[in-house]
Image (cartoon, protein in one colour):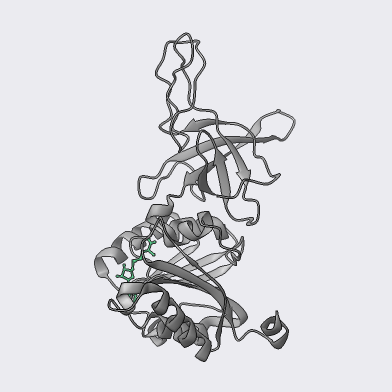
Length: 295
Ligand code: SAM
């Protein structure tokens, strides 16, 4: 995982579950990776772990919580709320105003084992077009685990249109979106974008994690309807969903060829081991202009 750059955000007082366990007056000592502190200092520590949150060294929309082990985190759009039981880390910001009170902000820990997008960031992907203010079409939203982190990444000025065809998952997604005003839940089939064209505006990024054999076609179809020229796509490929008899590397190569034929020009691909076995992500641009094509 990349080390955080120079965007330090102060010192936190641990996660929401990071309550100290020792006697009063002792020094708390962080334990574990998610800002979950357990007081273990000399004299019986009371107090949560001390965690510093820094900006990611390359991507402005994600952060690193530095403790005994580093964790990828996003800035919580809805402080006080966890979406799927993930840990939260509360951090004091810069002192602002005459009262000398510091801003508080909260981050949510993003487990790369539970998210292909999270795994690609931790795994060192070179491009991350999802930024503050981005409009993202997310295909395969499931119950909204990763969608919620994308919602944090794009922030209040951005939008996430999350498409999911399972009604059971769609219910969770819709409930999550009630608290997150920048998420538009769409319970539809991503193979039929005409059904949701009235709900979705022009997008900067299409992200797809549908785990279907025709997912390259699904991405191209949605890109042609909703992506601006030079817009970005990110596709997660689960090799055995496409062809369970071929070697994963051969499947990734053939999916890349399919994308190219549909005006989706890959810029890079990354396998997601050890977080997701036989998965890769491909990042690229749709109808990239000539200058971009040469790059
Ligand atoms: N991206 C999710 C996350 O990180 O939380 C996990 C997605 S899961 C691997 C794939 C999801 O895509 C499933 O919830 C499935 O119901 C959905 N899906 C599969 N085919 C779809 C389609 N044609 N249209 C919409 N959703 C689809």
